[in-house]
Image 1: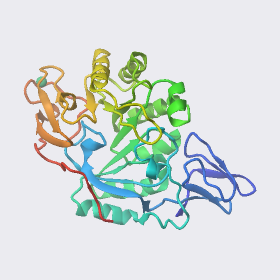
Image 2: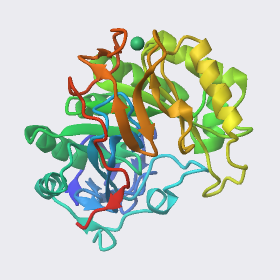
Image 3: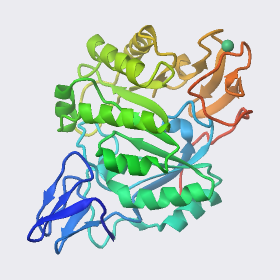
Image 4: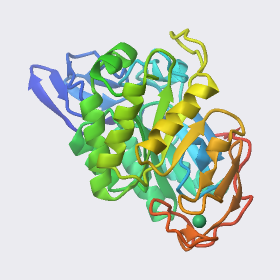
Length: 355
Ligand SMILES: [Zn+2]
């Protein structure tokens, strides 16, 4: 537990948390919407600082990041709480769970320990994921700084639910930003997540773009919710116009979970979403959560050969040298990685880490 940053006192023992768009005004003894930032005696505390609910090593492809150091084993951690209430959340057991003051149901992990474990497990990156990292602000700030000092890559897997000043602070220590844009209308956001924050999420995409962090966008396509041509086209057009045609876009299959009972996304729907994205000008649109679908490989936009081959979450051949297609020399503008990546690298099966 640590005193929070980014809040102010607004009355007798009442605080205003400025971290995310909820802008919670919190009376003494209560937590904000996220369930993990609590007013204790007129000061705001981050209850989950240094407290971890879930940790695993998995390939960076699982974030998903496809144009960023392929195959890198990534220490992935998350904790309790979230500032969205998505009806289809797959991690609802931790993300819709509030933290307690004594933290007895979480594992204590100081920043130094996290970095040490990541190195012990042979990881090249740390990712804050599973629940919304924004609300873990203080811990991520401390751990990301330390990770960078030790030569690790840093990855934020987020739904973009954070206020711009806080985001800018975190991005100073991030190498990659994987942004979940869940749909393309405020009405959809309100229905699915409980809060109409599409405009704020998109604004954060622009902030990330302007900092030069590596950015990839994901959309979980849910039948009857956000799979209309209008929403998919709108989103694709927004990425083209604002983040650029080289930005990877992952369209992934939804599976029923938590409170949503729609049937799983048909593969044909994802293929249509991919076609929509490509037809609007995007160069790299990926089909996700469908094992061994050809839409998970990276193809050269010029010669159409496979540049990065993926199987499950493992990486096969990487035919990129010095950022260009090895066959025709086409430059993959959004690719970041070693100049000569090795094929077959990476963790194929994610495994939980003993803390
Ligand atoms: Zn080529």
